[in-house]
Every structure is written in structure tokens, then in C-alpha cells.
Image 1 (cartoon, rainbow, N blue to C red):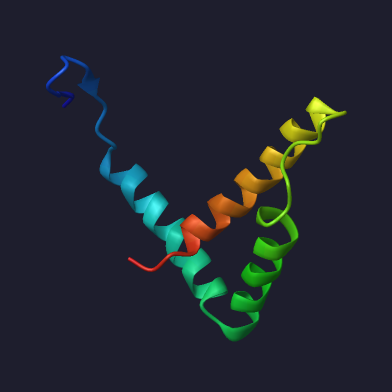
Image 2 (image 1 turned 30 degrees about the horizontal axis):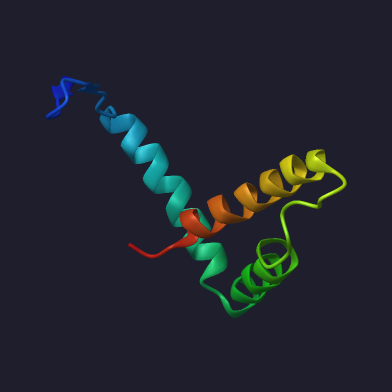
Length: 83
């Protein structure tokens, strides 16, 4: 059942099956990236994508591509986080 916050906006509540699916996905990512090899992969992805400039002065579209890459890496890292 939606709940109202202090601004009157209704919040959507996830169904239990959605919560279970999210937890299952996250547990798979945690299992994969909690290993030594998985941690090395995350470290590589962070260095390869997150530690590079996002935009170049002469090519604004490059920023869109780079931010998309960064978003994928951030999602993987977020899914892999321990509780």
C-alpha cells in the first residue's frame, strides 16, 4: 500500500517477490565479487572506468558514453556490496 511522505508524494512499496528477486540478484553479485578474483575484477573496473575523465572539451557526446560506462560499474559495485 502506498504511503505518503511529508510532501504528499505517494511512495510505491515493492512487493515481496520483487524484494526477493532483488536480494537474490544481490546475493549472486556478492558471492561473485567477494572472492579474491572478483575483487580484482572490481578493482580493474574501477581503475579502467571510474578513475577516468567523463567529458572532453571537444566531444560532448563522449561524456554520455563515459557516464553510461560508469553507471554500469557503479551498479555492479552497488549490487556486490555486503549488507
